[in-house]
Every structure is written in structure tokens, then in C-alpha cells.
Length: 372
Image (cartoon, rainbow, N blue to C red; front, side, top):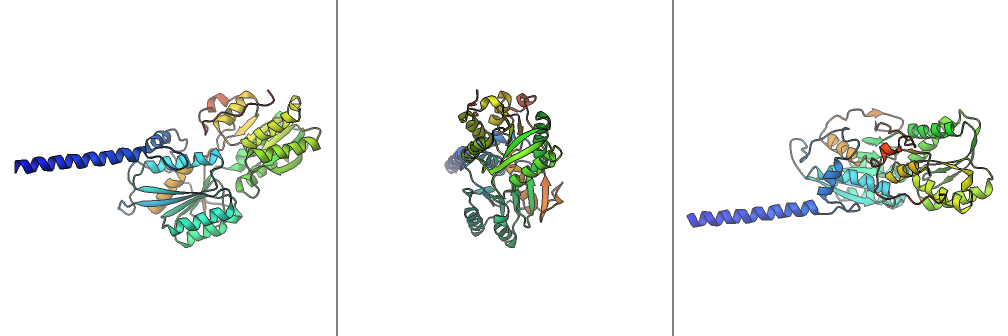
């Protein structure tokens, strides 16, 4: 009997060591796209700026008193930009806190048809909810409707869709653009020629950032918009746009761009045209640490501090919805469904850049300023 007890103890110790090893291996398993381990993500979670919104404790999520595996689909616009990867980091960080939650992540490759297919694929895989950040507003309406038709929660992040949804979550691109535009108007003393590099045509942030700019500039009749062009949130198209405008317009006082990448592209075009000495001012958006460094260096005059770290809030909203828990602060708004409007972050300018460097997203360095 004593020998059998000893054998059982040894077996249990072996089993325990296997379980512990499996847990350790899971903690070190790297997540798709971000390549972060669960351990990395749990540390990263502590740095996120908005964890006080829809707070949740660590541990397994209970739905109706039961702890079951939950599979949540995340359809991202695309991972061609580090801002989009940062959103996923915050989502994965929240998921790392809850061991019974599994994420299925899809890459829309900045293509409406691909992202629509991704939503259909997530539904066919039996997800319990969908989180989506759409590439374009109107084009993803059918995909959004399909989620609701399957009676699943749909949380939309950053870019909205004009269709029914459980909740849209985002900061206000309108009011944050107003902050940047007011700074531009002040520094231009209400006079000057401005070119505008928008984000992806048809996307709600591009529409709203343009609206916020116009809300301010309409009060300054001395500010003239010379041209607008679609920079698609990235650098290369913006270089081409700025090349053309520098040829067409002998006097440009400022660039109002919807993305840091567009502003860096515009600055490159200015240098190539030998027009650095004209002091064309750059006003931009995105809120990366590299962007804040460019503000400090004088490359940018202002950076709209629009955070990508909202994926964690999106997942918590899913959990609240599945658990029939009230979402404080949700409200009816201009589009179908409900919205949770997040607070604006202060625009980053030379006076406060040091306070914000390290609190933005991304750990890459800004490109060298070609005009310096």
C-alpha cells in the first residue's frame, strides 16, 4: 500500500510538472502579427492609457455564471501601418488577462472585398463576437449587417460604418482636428496658403478630420485651401501629391495632413524641390512616439494625438455585452447603433512634446528631417 501511494505521488508530481511546463510554454507562445508573448502583453497592458474605461478584473470571464471558452474575431483594416499593429497589441493585451478567451485575427490588406470575406470567414468559424476596424465606411455596411443577422455582438473601432452595431468606440476626429487647425490658424496669424493631404478617401477619420479643419478655417477667410489629395495614410502617395503641388503653387505656407506618414512624405518632397528655406509648416495626426520626436525636433508644428490603444476597450465591450452588463457612457448618435466616445488627448506641440514622448505608440525612430 505504501509503495502504491509513493507511485501515485510520483505520478501526480510528473503530471503537475507537465501542466506547469505547458503553462510556461503557453506564456511564451508568440501572438500573430505583434510577435509578443503573453508575458510581454501583460506587462504592456499596464502601460495602456484607457484601462479605466469599462474596467475588468484579471482571470477567466464568466458568462451566465459559467466559464466557457470564448472565441472573438478581430477584423483589422490591414497591418500595413504600425498604428494598426498597435491597436492589435492593446487587444491582445486584454485577451492575455483572460485565459478562456481566444482571438482569431484577420488582415484586410486595406481592401473592402478582402475584409468583407474576412467577416464571412469569422462567422463561418463560429466566433462568439466580432470586433472590426473597417477599411472604409460605406463599403463594410453589408459585412456589419451580416454580424447582426447572426445575432452576435459587433464592436466597431476607430472607423465607423453607417449600419446597426452594438457599439462604436473611438475618439472624436472632429474635435481633435479642430485642436490642430486652431494651432495652425494661430501660427499662420489667420493668413496663408494651405494644402491638405487627407487620409483614405471615404474613411470616417478622413471625413471627420477634414470636417474639424473646416470648422476652424471657415472663421479665417485669409486662409486659402489650394488643393486636397488622398494620401491613403501612407508616405509614397503623399510624396507624389506634394511634388505636384510644389510645381503648381509658388507659395505654400502650410501642409495639413491627416497622418504623420503623409507629413514625412511631404517634407521629403519639399527637400527634393529645394524649398526648405520657405519654412512650410507641417500639421499632422497619429500620435506616435516618432511623431512626437518630430514635433520636438521642429519637423512638425503639431501632432493630433489620436491613440490606437483602444483594442482593449473593444474586447472589454464584447465581454460586457455577452455578460449582459450595462456599458456606462454609451449613447445614441448620428449613425445607427450606439457609440462610446472616448476623451480627446491634448494635441502635441513643441511646448509639451517632452511630456508625451514615450506615451505614444511605436518604438521606431522618425525618418531624418531632409530639411536639416
